[in-house]
Length: 512
Image 1: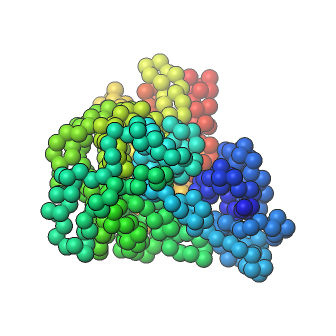
Image 2 (image 1 turned 60 degrees about the horizontal axis):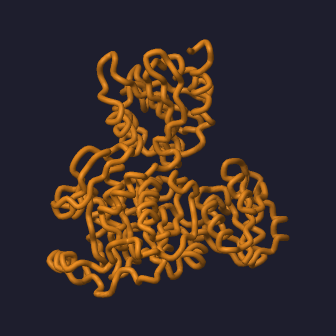
Image 3 (image 1 turned 90 degrees about the horizontal axis):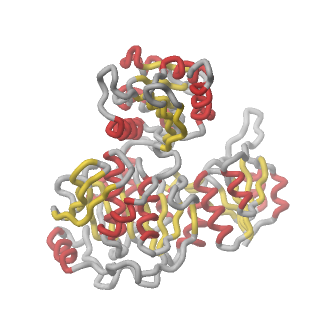
């Protein structure tokens, strides 16, 4: 099959392209602004890339066009279509589909899909789960919205599970069956687990980051509705994507659509601390449920985020000691452990894998250290872009480096860009001072914003500065940076290469 992907350089569509190529299909694609690193990765796979969306690409005559979410029916002020290729596809009647639909029909069919959904932590938790299963010999396929450092790639097809390496079968234990029966107050809401092994021993596994954003301009359902998981993680849920959702209730409805697709023999793993997820499940759930995080949850953590006991029903079943910090990652780990258990990996096995987990690129990724007398200045890169994610990321770093306060205490300089569609709309601007409480100083890049960042950050007083361009931002940060500082750069985009510019500016002779 020859597929031509419109919007191929996006993280998700690039992963679809890699999977299609690995499966033996001919893959070509187009995008605007075809640039490294994604362009280099795709070309290395033998995928031809075309700049722009010109209608002349119809001459390629692929078997199907796969349409990315970036494509729309939008027109310029003069009436010219912004995506002429899409208009030509529609006019010609050529076959087309969305990325999630193509994936569901050509990759996920016949596999035990483990889907990770949530407002925050999807990429990290998906990476953890894929690594746990791989470490156990189950050879999962995966598609992640980032690059797990343990794998070095964002997507692969996977192979057949080596269940001789996994020391526990996936069949529910007598304890699990009894507990499920005791907790099943409504048989229509909570079905009994299947008596058959879960999953079927021959079924290959596939772990996927399950996004609630819409599928395509012609399919406004959330992407994850296409995936039909047998194991689903609902990691957390709060308002986001203000460009397509009116309120939290609208997102909760989409999450319930996902829950509706999980079979009775499946498992839904959910965060017991989230009232929004409780509301989702109260709308109806017909699968085994496992909760994590709360004092009454099935899975709990006891101890510090980097060194903790995993408790199941109050009894210790594993000990996790790893290099990943933050309470949010402790919760991510519990979710991954509970999901892995559903396919036969014990919590103890999962903990061994997490000891070797290297996190994901752009998740508290150290980009460099500039030497200074008294301690180097460390620059980090993180994908955080929602106020809650910014706050939890800063909390994780603060726990790692020590408390805020005295003149000799390590300082955090938060450098951030409100770049997501939700943040650009200003929907959550009032939460920014709250999200930045753990930062000693904050620096905001305002390029492209439709609201006044200075006004939004005014409650922070002199702790916050605003810059209209990257060069000004770099000057502001370097003017106050001192030995021992930790500079955390946060954006869901490239951020104008600010990380490297900061490292170079701080290393300049005048700054040393």
